[in-house]
Image (tube, rainbow, N blue to C red; front, top):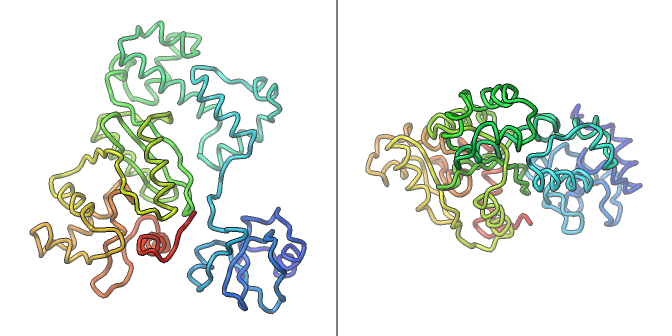
Length: 352
């Protein structure tokens, strides 16, 4: 029995009761139909001997099950509750506001619950999130010529020294010099294959990675150094654009991505990434073929490394490169995601 799962008796009870409180805790595979569901699925309850249980959707998919069309277990997971969603909208509307526990209580939110939700979903507290939003606004103001003293007060800081210290922690520089640096605006985007972290500057989208990727922290550091930028959560039109285009992509419309990209890298990496964008959707090539296409047929290993260094998933489709024997290899987002993306592009599946 998978240690992540409740006992079989408990899971069978949840399925029989259509207990939605177990949705996301486990998934049910029905051997007689080849379909997998959420525990709270309204479909007819299967016989116990036909039930198989999984901790993750990917486990069910790799066991040969297809998703139920009624409870849609692959639909976007992790969307915030309504009250948290309303709080996020308030932060967007008032990014300069200094939020306190009393403000949350006035909205009917318990500060500890908000803190736990942000730590679980974003790895930071709500206070840190709101502070980063204020710093984002402050850096923009300074870049546009605003006075440091005025900006400190306008963005909710009670002293110039406190503002300088906060900026130095984020930007690693004094306020005036920090304001001269780019800001990479970051946003967490939800997808049927798990959350993505997107980043954009005015010139283009420069980051799109699955949030659980192990190398993400290193990629963020490399990106910030190459663009001489600071990383802060915030809104940007290009993030809105790519979010809309990703929604169409996961529906399987086949519509091309038009979001402009900014891909800082070495000349060799840029050559590989440019060639990746020429691979048509629905097809896959080997690393050797990719190396040949850029005129360096003996550089398969270097091509594979450049593939791994790609920081913009899906739009720069490194998932379309496979092993010479047709096997799935080398995808930072996980091989199960690579399989799903290829199936989507081949018209065998739609994820929304």
